[in-house]
Length: 463
Image (cartoon, one colour):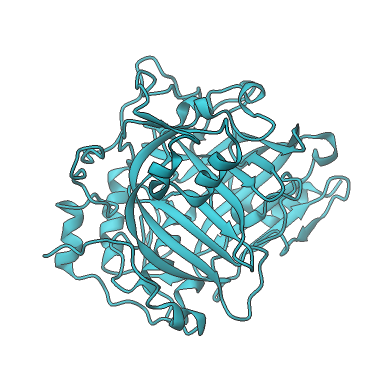
C-alpha cells in the first residue's frame, strides 16, 4: 500500500467546520491498511523508520528495561543523563529554529532573554504491553467517530489507541487525534502525589498537595469491548495541603461519548460531610490549585470533553518538544521553579514528529480560549505543547507537557503541565509536577474500586 505523505495542510475544510456540520463516521480502515501496524508503522501508528538525516532514529520497541538496582515505588532515574545537548535555542538564534517550535516557546524566548531551550538527542522511548498493541490493531478496523460529530465521541474501540491510522479528511482526523490523546496509554491504574505551584508577581506559592489516583476502565485487561461501560477514565483526588483544602475530595468520570454519557464530577467539601455533583469542574472553570491562571481542561495539554470545539488536522512535522524528562521529575521544586519560568537547564527537548491539530470553538459554544493549536507526539499520542489564543487572535497561553520514562509499565507517561500566561506573566506547575520525596513515585497497580464510587464517598462523608 502506498503510504500517505504528511505535510502541513491548508484549512480547506474550515468552512465546513465553521458551519458546525457533523462529519459522518469515517470509513473503516481496511485489513491491508491495518497490517501496516505490524510492518512500516509502530503498533500505535507512528512511522517506524527514522527521518532522512537520522536526527530522529527508527523506533525499535521503546524503553522497556528498568535501570539496574531500581525497585518498584521509587523514583525512576534519568536514563539519558550522559547525553550532551545538541544545541541551545535562545534569543540570539531563535529565528533560525522558530518553525520547529510552538509559537509560545518562541514568544517566551523573545520575552525573557534568559529563557532558552536545550535540545538533546532523540530517544523514541514510547512503549506499551503487547495486549495494548493487540487491542490497537483490532481498533484500527472497528473504531468509528460518532456520526453526530467526532467531537462528541467514538465507539467500537477498547483497550488501545482508538485510531492509530488517521483518516485522510482533516475534519475527521482532528477529532480522531484528540480522542487518541484522551485515551492514551498511561497504564490501567496508578497513583502519585501532586505538588501544584502558583507563580504570580514573582512570588511562588503552593496551590495544593494532593493524592491523585486513576483507574481506566478502558484499559481493564480482563474486560472487552462487549462489556465496556463507556467510561474511559475515573479520577479520585484528595488533598493533603494546604489546611483550607484538607479533607476535600474530588472525583470525575470521563466518557468516550459526551452525548450518550456527559462527563460527571462530584466533590466532598471539607467540613460539610456530604457529596455534591460538581458539573462546573470542567472546561474553562479555573482549577482549585491554579490561582485563576489554569483551567480544568488545560491539564495534560487538554483534559475532559472535546465537544465544545471543532478539531481540524493540520499536518505532521518534525518539531522540538519536551521529551524524556526524568531529570525534571527528580528535581527539587524549590530550586527549579523560578519567578518567571521553570529553570531551562533541567527541561529536556528532543526532535520528534508531531501531529498538529487546531481546535476552534464550535458555533453556539463558549469558552475563554476559543482557539488552541495542539502538538501531539506521534509515538505515544500525548500532547506535548499547546498554543492558546483569545477571541481577537492574541496569543494568551503556552502549555508545555513533560513526560517521564516508566519502563516497568512499560510506557513514556505524563509527568507535569506547565502553563504560562504570557499576557499576565504568571504561570502554574501542576498535575504531577515533581515527585515529593516524602512520598513514593508513580505507583502502578490496582486501586480500591470504592475510591471511584460516589455512593462510597458519600458514606465516608457521613460523620
